[in-house]
Amino acid sequence: MELVNLGFGGSALLDPFVARTIRDTPADLISLKIGINLVNADVMRMRAFGPAVHGFLDTVRDGHPDIPLLVVSPILCPMHEDTPGPTAFDFSRLAEGKLSFTAAGDPAERAEGKLTLNAVRQELQRIVSARAKDDPNLHHLDGRALYGEADHAELPLPDRLHPDPAAHRLIGKRFAAHAFAAGGPFAAPGN
Image: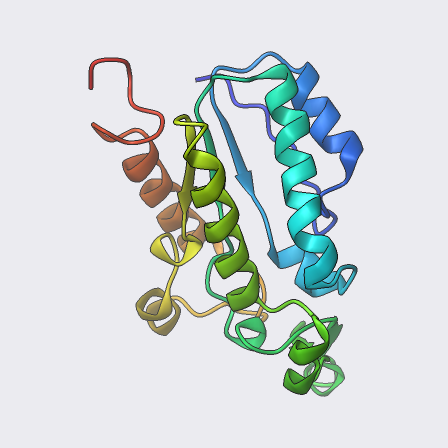
């Protein structure tokens, strides 16, 4: 595998130029991890999220109409499961010399369309399921299958937001086991 990583360090926000870059880059397989940065930055409401995902997928499919495409929803991040963003520094922990984050949104704001991780997961599942009826190479993976509640108990997010190296290895192993398994979205033909 030759990996092209378009990770944006907290700035993956469904920007159209990123979809165009993916569309124009040769690829045999594509995975898209969507969600946590949108909640962290508090840049979008549910009304805009669905159309933005559709537009992003439409653009990617313009250049790669038939290759396997796996949409991965957010991994578990307890502070944003049901509490919207934005994400803020936890200044009480900074005073202790520790970097940590907190959810600065209010759960009541969900009624106004503010995004939470659970809301993002539900909408991604709905969008991919609907589109997959006409796009058999479009797949969905709930990110909690890569890092969920049991994993958080064993390997908690040290700053309440980002996985540590051990958790990253676990996520990578699980992704490969799912995506490249026989019958998985990236399985070699005939497997």
